[in-house]
Image (cartoon, rainbow, N blue to C red; front, top):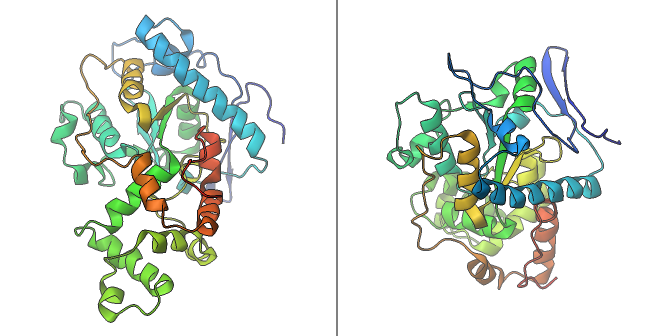
Length: 338
């Protein structure tokens, strides 16, 4: 399927159910004329999308944008090179896209890529003064369904309008560092009993020879190689979708169907987050929270976890996450033996 240059968004309804077909933009210059840029009465400002594409920002923002533009172009080329089939998006596919109508923003959240802090920031932005400091919002409250609206909640015309006129952004991370971070958080922390019961017991039952009854009951000591075996086991995805914490980014956010104006990276989180806040016009009033973690999962830590994974399983796992490596321009890790 060849996509026309400057392709538009198309949406359709079928038998009362919402189906969204989004043609990927090869080029975008300006938002549609006549789009309201601020929902607040008496206000007239540029929308973030207009600010991004009109190119009249301050020099510091322009410098950051050159990097962001390069990522957008690489993503577009990777999509054209590595994707052939186009599928129709359903409302379920849009549940990770958080909407801020006040600042004309759409953010696709990816677990283990600073999404808690981004949700906190968006709660501040959409709260009309109820929240002022992102870090004052408890992490569990940031993840409560209903605190933020998602694109899936809107009607077809409203989805279409927002996708066309709002600044859409996503933050990504080196795929295996994100995966190790998810494993550490969900399977090595004693407080995550829900994950231990929901996933740990199944992983141990299937991938541990002769487990004892207590391990089968609690599921609280899953080993990393067992987690890898679970991920590459064909039965896993046949039975149910991956949990969002280890689902591939391209399956959560559909970057070859939805045009993201900003592709931020966890590795350059602070300047990229600052660029988004500047585009939204709130850089003077809101600061993105900095991470205080002293044991953040990085490449060297990921290498230690992969050291005892056989080349056979390393290759199967890399193939599983291959599209995330390709689409977001991450190199094959040096520690892999494939």
